[in-house]
Image (cartoon, rainbow, N blue to C red; front, side):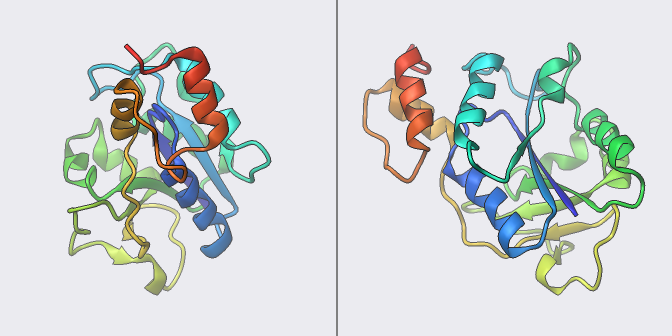
Length: 200
């Protein structure tokens, strides 16, 4: 099984890393790939540059089993999930179970994603609990699954809620306040401060 964790990672934080490590150590995923978005179709802007976001990911995953995938950053096109998933599917073959990681807060918008039905034909969805958002009634508890489907199923993962958001980190840095030590890797915070990212 391969987990695909896409996002802006603006910046990467401890919640992303905890999810990835948990999938590898507790749920027997063979890989967890962190895939930073290049040109997001839904967000108006990103704050750090692609190179800065990539370097923060490298710092955060140093000496880690988490894998980084820069295919969206290398592409000049809009970062549609369907293109990413199909590209990965072509690499790993048609028999490998894929799971696109998504917060329960993002799932209500999933039907409006570009070619959402085709995404589900190429991968499963694995929903992660987010504050104030419940998993849909139709999602299957990942812990009770009978097998690992290649694609086409929406699961939810019974994890404790991780209440960390990149937007909160950016706002805290912009206001000159201190971040809780468990929010972001120290190496990433040091890099943010050195480069004065999110200050303006």
